[in-house]
Image (cartoon, rainbow, N blue to C red; front, top):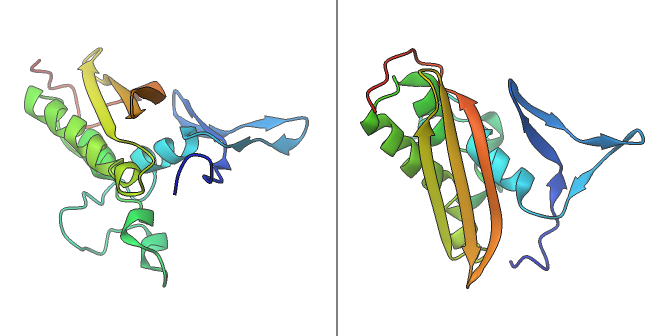
Length: 156
């Protein structure tokens, strides 16, 4: 697969309390870029599925026949920000989890490098900057401002 043959998704966008679909003139807007694919990779699936072992907490769509490993939504990133306190170690783990959740882009040869950089903005808010490159070109760049829901333990 390459970006020329990527069919895209329904356009989803980040909001303060989650995500929403984009609508214009009463019609859903499609996304021929990577916005929705990246959003679903980071925030899709079951937030309790940390992806470390096969478990009953996997998103139901992952159990359907014919779903490849690259198509499964595993919420490693969400499991950390929803389930663990915000500490320096957990911020580093969240960055690595985000890279792992997006690794399929490299496997599918859509990207060569994924950079995830996280920062505590307050004791309950976290900014995750994602940059994806293919060759020398940046093909995706976004910052997600997300609530860190496991409490207010900040050690950064």
